[in-house]
Image (cartoon, rainbow, N blue to C red):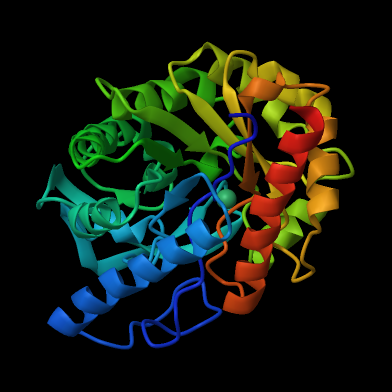
Amino acid sequence: MLFPSTVAGSLPKPAWLAEPNKLWPKWRLAGDDLAQAKLDATLLAIKVQEDAGLDIVGDGEMSRQHFVHGFLEFVDGIDFANKVEMGIRADRYKAMVPVVRGALTLKGRVHRAEAQHARAHTKKKLKITLPGAMTIADTVADAHYGDRARMAMAFAELLNTEARALAADGVDVIQFDEPAFNVFMDEVPTWGIEALERAIDGLKCTTAVHICYGYGIKANIDWKNALGDEWRQYEKIFPALAKSRIGQVSVEVIHSHVPMKLLSLLEGKDVLAGVIDVATDTVETPEEIAGVIKDIMQFVPKDRIVACTNCGMAPMRRDIAEAKLAALGAGAKLARERFG
Ligand code: ZN
């Protein structure tokens, strides 16, 4: 089928689960009640995506507070008690980060509960996201490995363990979120891709990477304002991604400053093209979405285009996110009718 539709990852959490409209919300419950509420919210996220007509649905990331720390919680060897200040994303902003103080190991399964619950309740293709190794390595301080690339490979091993288990749970698409890929452009072709390939090693399901200019926080908005009219970071990393073993690449397209012709550098990959802007509350029309898909077809073969959101929708209002998902489903369908 042409132009299948999906989401980049997160959806807004219900207010009974966590504080709304926040990137790092506090949970409303604890213990067993929280565990059950996460699963209930997962079910709701799937229902909303199915009703919107999406073809590949996700868990909405209902079970994690933050896209990186949701994984780190399950990793031993990290000291969360004595955080240190570190410049993140090449010093774009400072954050208090946990410190790696010993060999990294997994405490157990990370996303089993929500993946299995989602799998049991939808017949659609199912996608689960994980943070990418390079982005994780840029979100923790290192007091053990002595080399960022080595630490990233250690995280990639753990990601691979969880990814293989997710595939065994029946997950169809496993995506790694790598916003750090367009910050450390010189390292991507060397150890960034190597760590990504280590994370997908042996996977038979579809694999994807989401690259991103970041949303929501002021430091990201300021950074983007400083990048000029044309954002060409992808020009450096797309050729390396095209040569890699990753199956799909998820990038923002609608209202982006990235020249659309750069998408042609992703030859041989499925492109999860963002046709929904997550930085505005204005809901796209199906007509508008079909128009963007038509433009993308100049640079990506149509059988390689997947209609997607630019990024996660976690900090949005629920009603707006739902309206945007409905537009996404309808826009992809319209494009199918027109260009199929
Ligand atoms: Zn993103």
